Amino acid sequence: MELNILALCYLLGSISFISGLKMLSNPATARKGNLLAAVGMGIAIFGTIFLYEENGAKLGNYAWIFGGLLIGTVVGFLMAKKVKMTAMPEMVSLFNGMGGACAALISIIEFRHLVHVDPVEYASGGYQFYSSLDGTKLLIILLGLIIGAVSFSGSMIAWGKLNGKIKDFSFKGQHIANLVIFGLNVLLAAFIIVARPEETPLFFYVIIFLSILYGVFFVLPIGGADMPVVISLLNSFTGVAAACGGFLYDNKVMLTGGILVGAAGTLLTVLMCKAMNRSLKNVLIGSFGGGNTSGQPGVAMTGAYKEISLSDAAVVMGYANKVMIVPGYGLAVAQAQHVCHELEKTLESRGVEVKYAIHPVAGRMPGHMNVLLAEADVSYEKLLEMELANEEFKSADVVLILGANDVVNPAAKTDPASPIYGMPILEVEDAKHVIVNKRSMKPGYAGIENQLFFQPKTSMLFGDAKKALQDLLAEIRNI
Amino acid sequence: MNQILEWIALHQEMIYVVVLMIFVGIEVIGRVPSVLHTPLMSGANAIHGVVIIGAIIVMGKAEQDNVPALVLGFLAVVLGTLNVVGGFVVTDRMLEMFKKKK
Image (cartoon, rainbow over the protein chains, first blue to last red):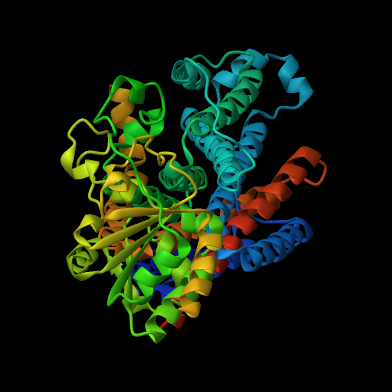
């Protein structure tokens, strides 16, 4: 009876995950969808604690279980409540790493359990013992371990990189080293499964080490702007690792939840890559930034850029009919979203129409700009997606670009030699004036020059986005 | 070859579930507006926290005298809970902001 109720709990859990994810994909129902999935998760968790049975035995160690749940809940809740909106992507990465570590730990414990023998039995022939292990179980344990551990260490590095604690790091032949580590790992795992050597436990621990190392090396060389893609990919990895647990325990809710996230996460990864006009392979092997760019001369930059003073910029914007703001990575880094909203309100009080043009991959994650501007209370209707924005640029007097670069680079349309050729961009040159706020003339993430900065209608306003906006705001109020 | 076929036949129920869920996952996400990508990723992140159930099972099965299993299991439960609770709360915070601006 109780097991039947548990089966029902798991069914409810699975349904809530699927419909929750479905509701999450519609702005009107998203919040309810998240809540629904959370309720389903709660049902599955408490069902497991009180109803789960294995060979007629219930679970024990309630003190440990509830202690762990309590600590995790309090810490997780506080972290999630306190994190700043700008730090959201690294938070997701951190939580994802926790899930990966959890999956890897389960594999470690199950492995220890699987190979556990009492010494007397072992003395009578340990060699035969390993060969009698269930191969399918071993395969799934190893799979869960490798994927979980890679996801854990990779997510930790991604987290460190996004909050600036870890810098980009790569050495010559890193891809080869990565491949070697990965290959070695797979070979060792296959060797354990097929040959069952006496050193099976030792090899198992070597695999843990290699997997963690691989995760570190895999994410380290990837640039900050590509981090969203990597986090999304690691997110789907953790999903697959969770599904391995589902296989292991013949647990349908883990299996469905894990595979659901694995599939959805992979698709999301591909969608992000598409928006950046990059293949997943390029992101992972990192063809930008590396030696590749030196081999592609592209179009040589000629001419000079011109700077605009704060007071000039204030006048141009203060007397415009329509201003379009293009937020980018620089806005997120400087946490300038609130000042930006102030500027928007001040301009509107002067009768200037203000809209935001949102490139799908602006910021650190797709949709990141929307979340960021929503935090600053920017009205939803003011955020224009790329196609709509490109229509509106034609009637705009001023475009203010805040820390965006590659997403407004006309080379994506005009220069077939450019590494970003073909990427959909915001066509800001259609406006009458373009004011670009950047910290310096340094190229953006893709490592290529931006012709836009040298065009006659473009003027540069150097400085940190927050500082520049504050000064600009003061100037506009003074007009 | 025969072994592989046997393995597939033996686990066909699981394999069906996997294949169908892959389609469901792709179908469900395919129509998401890009505005919702970040909350969606975060929500999916919370859902794979379902791995916590495995952690609870290993924790509950650990023998009283098996200290490594108890400690590792406990750690797994804590980390899994972090994933679930943190994931859902962060997602809710993001979505809350989307609502406010109406």
